[in-house]
Picture 1 (cartoon, protein in one colour):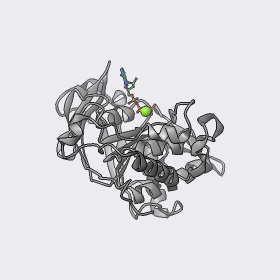
Picture 2 (cartoon, helix red, strand yellow; picture 1 turned 60 degrees about the horizontal axis):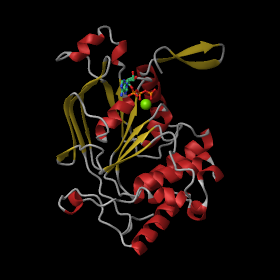
Picture 3 (cartoon, rainbow, N blue to C red; picture 1 turned 30 degrees about the horizontal axis):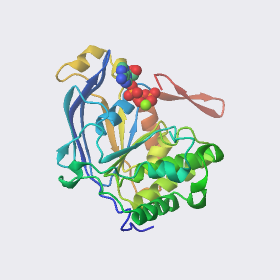
Picture 4 (tube, helix red, strand yellow; picture 1 turned 180 degrees about the vertical axis):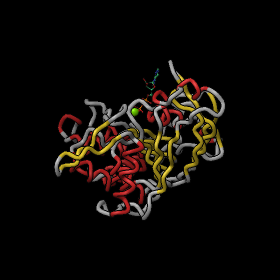
Length: 296
Ligand SMILES: Nc1ncnc2c1ncn2[C@@H]1O[C@H](COP(=O)(O)OP(=O)(O)OP(=O)(O)O)[C@@H](O)[C@H]1O
Ligand SMILES: [Mg+2]
């Protein structure tokens, strides 16, 4: 589906330098990462290693203790309007129709909008608003279902509405925190293709947190594997200059998105990533059982 005049998007690059965040312990340390405009980067790592924390730094929902986050040429701002976030739960308002929920994502103009080059979209006229909503619902294949309320639709439909709401503001950056984690396996595979369709139509920069190595291999241009600093031999060293850093590996995934899930090259990479996550194979007779040895 081609980008249209009402939903054309403006992807921006992300630049992280020396990003650190500690709560009762160091969670992120020394994160250096460049994400190109329009790139899809997946973030993998054991549970509690700081994936959601990293996403919050990118969207300006939380501030790093050290380092900088830039979106395009400017620092990330508090609740940065250039970013949109979608979570594992669709977080729809139950009393509103899907269409009205998506409408909540349409831009709210502020005085800043008219002054900055990276402004959010200007106020829409009523016909423009109607056209944008119809287009967004069509994009996520909800069309006529837009009139239904969240309790009247499946989990996959609700999640598609959540995605459309995130896209409504024409974000430069789309931050997805395990967006398909609560869906059944088949719906999840369909949603992965839908995300790529949407990305083709609206080439946004995407950072996708997932626990699913196969999902990362199918969707992402690159995969960032985070380490759990609390599992390091000396976690306190993460607070010091030159101590353990959060990024364990950054992997460029061979081939292009919508990869063949049976590609042997991906199978080797999958194994490496699983080992990086602390998942080892136990051979029991002819069966191979993945088992978690840390956090995940
Ligand atoms: N606002 C906060 N205050 C205190 N601790 C926090 C806060 N946010 C996160 N943490 C802690 O930081 C660590 C990382 O949390 P985060 O949610 O980023 O992990 P995650 O990698 O997304 O985990 P999961 O895979 O389970 O979603 C956890 O130990 C968590 O308890
Ligand atoms: Mg998380």
